[in-house]
Amino acid sequence: MYTNFNKRKFEPMEIEEENNSDINNELKIINSKLEKIENKLEVNNNLIHYNKVCNGCGGLHIKGFRYKCLFCQNYNLCESCERNLNKNFSKIQHDTNHFFIKINNSANFDNIFPQYLEAVRNYKGQFI
Image (tube, rainbow, N blue to C red; front, side):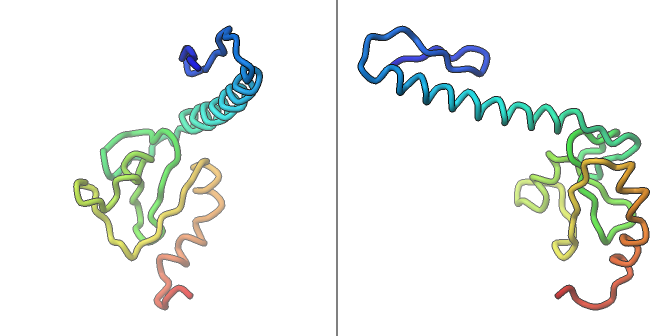
């Protein structure tokens, strides 16, 4: 069975086989899954955290999810740098005992959680 791959979509071809309808149904399922993945990627790419600088690459206005260290006063990473955090090949190193939070809306996060962040930063005990 051969298919054309065109603009991230598998298109069924006219082939005279008994199981052609089964294959076409599978292609529809694959296309549906690809659409869902593309929609998620599109949503992530539309996220912009204005005036937030990535401490890994230095990029201004972090695009996609923002990763904030809960222990450091002002340490943020973009998605790409967070993926490479503390990897052997990466220059991006950070205390492995620190926790990061994944943020999709900086305005809401920065307005609602400052007291929570301060409590976490000042916590002297251990997390249970």
